[in-house]
Image (cartoon, rainbow, N blue to C red):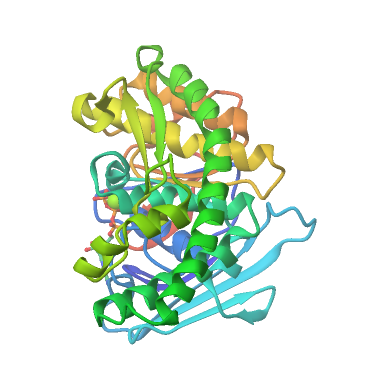
Length: 363
Ligand SMILES: Nc1ncnc2c1ncn2[C@@H]1O[C@H](COP(=O)(O)OP(=O)(O)OP(=O)(O)O)[C@@H](O)[C@H]1O
Ligand SMILES: [Mg+2]
């Protein structure tokens, strides 16, 4: 992998990856930046939701990352390349050919990120949870992305009409009909995925922490489940006209981690929340692997923070049994050695002031 001008990484060549790759170094050395670079290669953007400008080295106009997805179902590694510029352009190549959408890139390198920001999944707004859910649906259901694009177009058009008070005439009706159709399809894909996710999540959270075995996932589709989407839209029409936008539908869906009647975010400790987040991410990786798709690559920033040794070890044990590719950061490499199963080969990389060196002798 080659990283150019990503934060403090001016020019970094990285090779010799194993299943598990540990990036260690002092504060500010560039560890998170390496994870950001890998994320850029898979998603063409930052995992922190920051603007791409913050990823480009100060004073430079662009950043680039080249690498390959060696774990794809094809036998040959597939070359991937991403360039982002300060003015917001994205140039993406897959197998040497330019592609126009991030989706065409993302399918080759499914990434799961576990960082301090991942707590948003539990404590943040539903948008983060919908993105989580849709990430899973996207990777297992090929038809989802087409419907998703169609849904975005329909709702934009319908909201435009509502905002401008153009509620009579056939136009609103036609967009509403299309919206109902595509919204129904999206919900079906999400529900099917949720059905598969729920038992895997239960199993994984129980393995990570038996005391959390009672946690469960709940899916809300975004409208009254007694009604079809067309009916819900019809019933909501007056309110939609009043507010000037569509207020029911898949754009309001949510997936929540609950402990009985309580939201996990309200009652779990910080460490328990981190375990729930890990369980959510690991479940998605497991489902993807089960379905015979490209296996996920995990980017884990600072695993030991907030987790004690026993729980860190359980997370690592699960990742090891899943044979997932992992990039994990820490300050002291011993922290990771001690929680990873001994039989596992770890590739160690020392990060120092923006340079990254393989270190086979790191303890
Ligand atoms: N756009 C940028 N251009 C140049 N340097 C940047 C840019 N953005 C951040 N940096 C710097 O890059 C350095 C590495 O940051 P990074 O977050 O990768 O560190 P880290 O090794 O993860 O540290 P920590 O252990 O504190 O998490 C920091 O000194 C940071 O200030
Ligand atoms: Mg960091």
